[in-house]
Image (cartoon, rainbow, N blue to C red; front, side, top):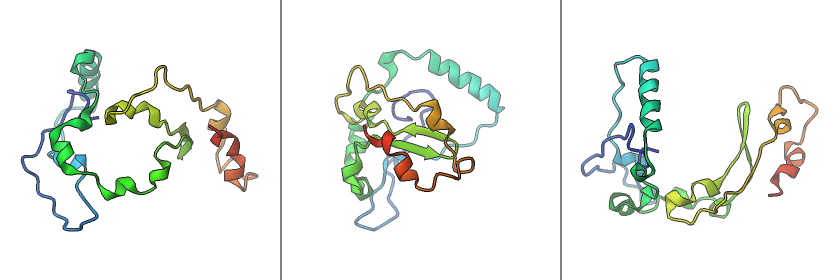
Length: 153
């Protein structure tokens, strides 16, 4: 997000050194940014300022393909990006605490220089899917079998 929007964008480091010497680990894009200082203002004031700035953005101010810059290209691809390569276009529900949402890779394709489908796929996580909770549904013992209907996309 820092690369795409000019609002709240962090500063670039000048010639950051990578402290690890492992050949299989390379820095990621986050390594290029200077650490963010903690603001000395009230949170609600910062939120108001930030949302106002976001609301005033024009499409021309957004970097639609942020990973094409030379600084990022020079990083190369981290080996961890190739782990589970066969799952890169997976469309399945993700469960994080109380929220169930689909992993929607097609929504971020343009950021990586890929052609994004228009109109985008319409994938809905139904209310019934959101109601499922391992604490309230102890009768479900095989969650993979129970969710097979949601993995048919």
